[in-house]
Image (cartoon, rainbow, N blue to C red; front, side):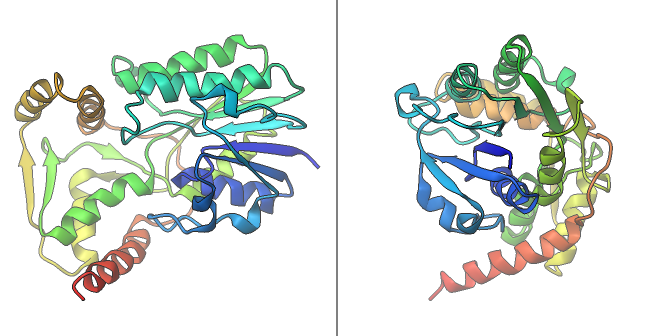
Length: 300
C-alpha cells in the first residue's frame, strides 16, 4: 500500500484530497497546524476527514523544527499549501514558497517518489503578481529537485465562486468590470480525483476546470435565481478598483496583492479542459441552504 502525505489537509481542496486518496486505497498522513479542523466539516461543505486519516502530523510548514519526521516512510506528497487570508503577519513568500520548500527539502532526504503540487492555470496572465510569483518560484525548485512531480493547475474552486452567492444573499452582487469574462470553476471533489490520478500518471502539468463555462454575469444570475431574488448587480469600473489597490498598498501589502490577483482573474478568461460532474447551480443550492440557516439562527 502506497503511503501519502497531504499538506494543506484542512483546506477546501485538501479535505477532498484526503478523502479521495483513502477511498482509492492509499495510507494517508495529514499534516495539520490545527488538528481540530480535521474533525469538522469545512465552511464550504468540504467533509470532515477524521475517519479518512491514518495518521495526523501536527506541524507548521513555516517552522521547519516542527516538521521532523514528516516524510518518514512516505511515497507520495501532495501539497495545496498556500494562504489567502493573512495570518501571523505571514506573506505569500513565507508560505506559498518557503513553506512548500521546507516540505520539499525534507522529502529530498527521504525515499519520496513523487510530489504533487497545486498552483493556478493560465499562469502567463498573472505571473507579475506576488501570489503567483511565489508559487511559480516553488515550482522551479520542484522541477530542479530531481523528484518526479505533477503540477495541477485548476481554474478556480467552487469555494471561491461562493462569494457570488454570499453577495446575493446580502442583496447585491458587485462585479469588477463588465462581467463578461469567462471561467469554468471546479468542485473540490472533482478536482481531488484529478489530483489523486496525478500520483500514477506521467504528466508534469495538468490544466483542469469544471464541466461548464460561465461568464461572471451568468454566475451572478444563477446565485440570485437560487435564492429566488431578482438580480441586483453593480459593475465597478476597473480604474476605480486600481485606485483602491494603490491606496491600500502602503498599509496592507498582502490584501492589496490579493485584490490585484482577484482583479486580474476578472479581467481575463480563465478556462481549462473540462472535468468532473458537479453543477455550480446545485452547489449554490446546497450552500444557500447552509448560509441562510446560519443567518436565521444568528437572529435568535
